[in-house]
Amino acid sequence: MDDREHETHDRLTRRQSLAKAGGLAALLAGSAGWKLAAGEDDADAAVGPAAVASGAVTCVLAPEQTEGPYYVSGAKVRRNITEGRPGVPLTLRLRVVDASGCTPIRNAAVDVWHADALGRYSGVQDQAGKTFMRGVQRTDASGVALFKTVYPGWYPGRTVHIHVMVHIGGNVVHTGQLYFPDTITDAVYRRSPYRSRPNRQTRNAADAIYRNGGRRSQLALKRLDTGAYTAAITMGVHRS
Image 1 (spheres, one colour):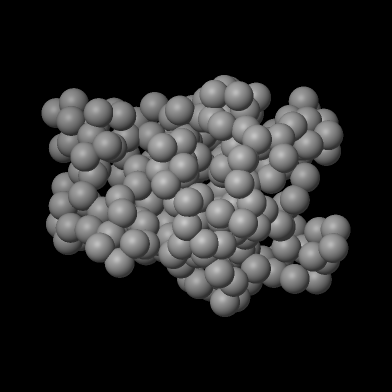
Image 2: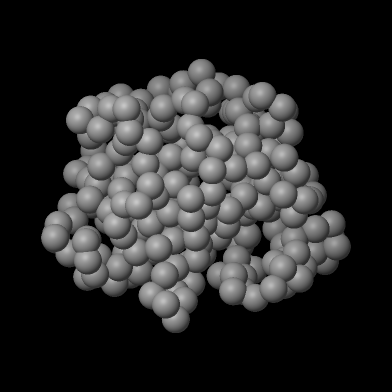
């Protein structure tokens, strides 16, 4: 693990203190079968009071996770965060719901940031002043924020991940990290430009942060005919 990330992992930041009561809810039995490429009706049917009452959907709060050393405030409000950088296209579908009933939360600000295909973060170190792979989107009436990005690359000491922060009414209600199945990452990394950096060092099971709730923060992925991927998760939060 990167020393700076290790130090951040060992303490709660101010944002995490604000969000301590919040958390990330994963769809358990239903999440793996969520039809991302299907119509909105299918996705909408997967959450809501009726689904919760029937037991078809269970929202479970997962532990907060460190925001890491590479958070940069003031990210642009935009859907496409790639800035033309290469990589396997990835559409993120992040749904924010009220953890008490899995009902959608509209107008939450969802903030994401991650490494590019070559494992570099914008805004820090030799990439200071750059903004690729960072952005903010507001959730729609279904609680969904969409991002167009690329499959993240790896860097030493960490498994592949995306950082996420959810803001409601100016308050941070969740800080977490989103993860990928290792088998899918292995397939993606056989493609360009990822294959120029073989032998990634850390897989999910060896990542200290992943071991603290990562299984419940894993994205449901689907490969499209074009070779691109869609990824989805439902994040259950308390409004304050």
